[in-house]
Structures are given as structure tokens and as C-alpha cells.
Image (tube, rainbow, N blue to C red; front, side):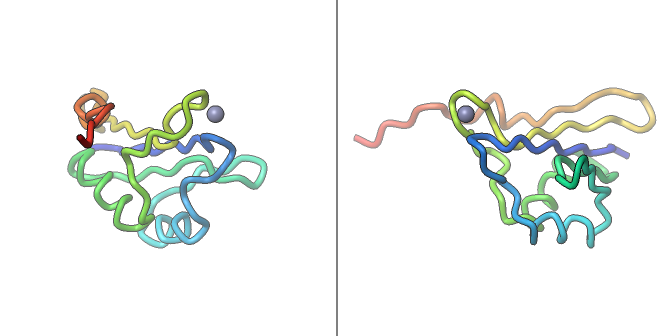
Length: 104
Ligand SMILES: [Zn+2]
């Protein structure tokens, strides 16, 4: 299994996961990480990192590829640790997404 960890960065000073989104994650079995009353992450075991991110996307309605603001960086970080080998996995879309798309 892959222990999928999600970390939230309130890029630009706003929350990128709604309260309803956090509730949906908790109801689906994600363990929420809270500190001083704020939720900043969640984790759950999945067959693959991709499966975890896909469920997170469905439950939160958020976009895992959001880029956030220039100074604070991306609001959504995902990683996955193989519970057998200890190997870490990171989503490939961070590196393949086009950064600039001309429309004309
Ligand atoms: Zn910023």
C-alpha cells in the first residue's frame, strides 16, 4: 500500500480546501492533521498515489494542479510512502504540466 499524504499551504492567504472538503475527506477515512484548530493535511492508505489523489479530487472538488500565488507556491502537496519498501512517490503532473500556454 501507499500511505498518501496531503499537505495544504494557504497560498495567497486563502484556504484551497473548503470546510466541506475537509469533512468529506474525514468521512471517507482520511486522517486529518490539525494544529491550533487549523487543518493543514490529511493522509490515507491507497493502492497507488494516483488513486489517493483522484479520491482527494473527487471529495474536495479542488484542483490538485492549482499553482497558487507566485510568492507562496503551490497550495497542494502530495506524496506517498510505500508501506512495504519505504520508497517515496511524488505526483508526476507537477513536472509535466505546461507552465505557459499561448492562446493565439
Ligand atoms: Zn503569496
